[in-house]
Amino acid sequence: MALNVPNLKFHNGAEIPQLGLGVYLVKDKEELKTSVKTALEVGYRHVDTAMIYGNETFVGEAIKESGVDRKEIFITSKLWNYDHGYEETKAAFQASLDRLGTDYLDLYLIHWPSAHYIESWKAMEELYKAGKIKAIGVSNFQIHHLEDLMAHTEIMPMINQIETHPEFPQNELHDFMKQHNILHEAWGPLGQGKRDLLSQPVLVELAKKYNKTPAQVVLRWHVERGEVVIPKSVTPSRIKENSEIFDFSLTQDDMEKIATLNTGTRYATSPDDEEFLRKTSVRPQ
Image 1: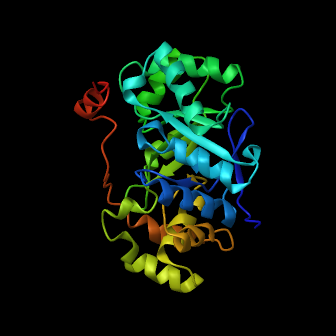
Image 2: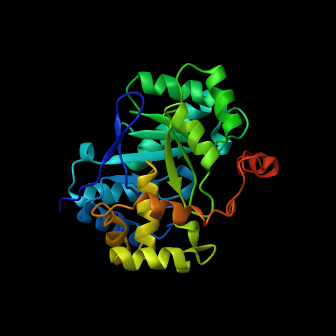
């Protein structure tokens, strides 16, 4: 099925589909494979996984079983905190390739800014130059992390995947990335269900106006901001619904109404939580 998903361009000229399927915490093999295959049937061509999700193998199997050519699918994976370091990164990257059953990645990200991310980035630069990765980026990096990385390495990050939703739009970081030509990718784009975001009157009213759901309005808000969005779902009807966001637009007035939902509330771990970064950098015995 043809799904008209725009591509956004990285600063190196490569492109990423603006909509992808997130598979965070989906551990059940059949559930995961069904959701990936459903997404590919609907027309998604972008799947976002990570080593720490424990499902790269299932993602690879689902892609193979889907019958869609690997070259048509944009695959992202991520380097976990206890794999940081130059040699460690190269080994972790190869292990992700092996699990996914592919010989290259479209995008590889440093998952969190824990210790030794500079060494990891230098290894990723080499893998990128060797053609093993089409684009390299980071996840959960704050402005000061990005500045540090850019000061000590050769290639600027092409994308930063961060918690973003109407209650936490990350405006300052969003503007910084725009200024430096780093794409903004939103994870937890619907607020991760931590609060009843989707019942907010502003969103309910806009959903009625456009004959859409509040979730579709929120996803369209991300699109209007020029962000890549990777909503997670294992429900076939929701996967389809999440893709139906390219046949309407929000006005400036609509965007201003949604801006009133900004409470500055981060629902997930802060990238500046040193205790979290330290604990997750220790490899399990």
